[in-house]
Image (cartoon, rainbow, N blue to C red; front, side, top):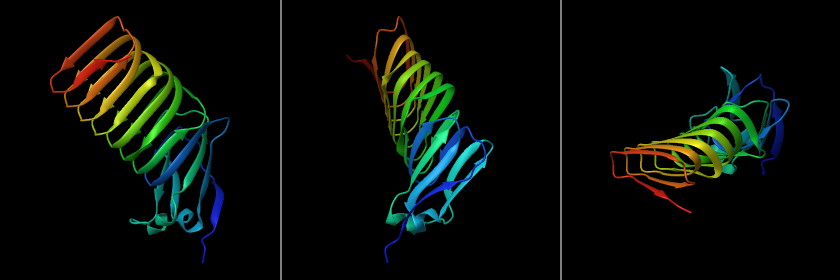
Length: 214
């Protein structure tokens, strides 16, 4: 028997953080009210739990090994008024479908997957600790990149005035900086940058590399 696909809204309280701790892809929108819509096979939707804890919307599943997810990966369409932090801690992608505007925002990839974010913010902090990547476009006054895993942070399409890079893993970081670049390389990773920042500092204790590209 074919399993039906459902399209359902879940009632949630206010939140400004999102954490994907299950399997699936999140399509993220900034709007005038918070909402969560799930598109998934009915047996998959029945396994999905969504809770708000300390202002964080957490997406989890009921079973330790939810074999129902083999029938199809769920999609989450999430609208948020104001976002301060997004985390992939499971397996999937978080994709912004419009430009997110924020004062400060944290973007974390601790799982298997990636974040694909269009953002305009004063301060952006990224932490790439899993397998996958963080892709950024937009503008920022300050960008902080922390690399401790094997993945990649691609910020060539995000113009930042100041950038701070801390690389302790084997990953790769690509940035676009106009005024100030501070880089600390302790692993074997690679940093590539565009721009001509008049202030440039690099502290390298590992065998990582930093290179200017066109």
